[in-house]
Image 1 (cartoon, protein in one colour):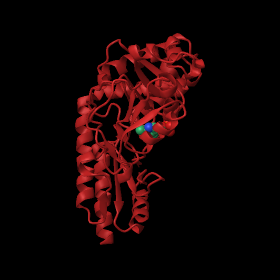
Image 2 (image 1 turned 45 degrees about the vertical axis):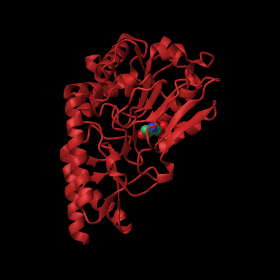
Image 3 (image 1 turned 180 degrees about the vertical axis):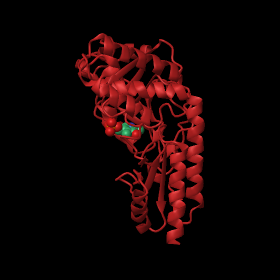
Length: 354
Ligand SMILES: *Cc1c(COP(=O)(O)O)cnc(C)c1O
């Protein structure tokens, strides 16, 4: 089955095989990975290796803390303002789509927010302008690097005067980017990292020192950091599979992954632009290499195409329920060959319907 789901997303066969083996007998310990103690040496080794891999893949030094947390993207939408929105200084939000807006709306519960720019008026079909001036007095600036639902993506992250906090849930490890321009970045596992249940959070220690410490421990980044991500029972299996996926990512190398992602996106967008039945939804210059959003000129063709694909063992190409249309997610575990098969299906469908 070719899986273009937006998340939980496809994982490589080799990672799935190893994870399946570990469920029965982890590393010949005679124990299932589902039953190892979370404060023992076996899990500590998994945590240590995963942190090391994140540091390597993102080019970070020890000034960054790597945490694994529960609660998905939405808990980060709450914890970011709870920890870093000071009562004296507003936080800036860049509104480029569904998730960035949700992050901003959650933050309004905790203090003053300024929307620095927005493409809501264009139905998020393009990126907003990057704000020209960013005051260093802002508590932080929040940005979503890839807009999973609308299919746009920031090409790079500039250095700014205030701490930059990035939601990288749907494009982390997909390309070379300067992670060190961020004071914090986070990503839910279920797109490019692993299974749902774990969220990767990386925070500069400087910023961590400024965090609000007057919070219940489960909602405090500092408390999680002090306990090395085992404040309570962590999602051991999700972190383990994420670690396997980080190994897979390192084996291929970010440069190799980026080259394949570029080729995948080019192949699919070329077909979207060529095919008489379909059109791309996002503005060309802002197109995402992770989530290609498109639609059919004749709405009835969308449902028919989804059915056509399912007969050819292609799944996950429905657009998000909030906007409809079609979307193929091209995360790291999706191969160029998978994309070529989707392109072939689009061509065969066009022949049938024109
Ligand atoms: C999927 C996604 C989320 C939401 O994650 P949940 O774990 O479902 O809360 C947040 N941000 C972005 C950019 C996403 O793609």
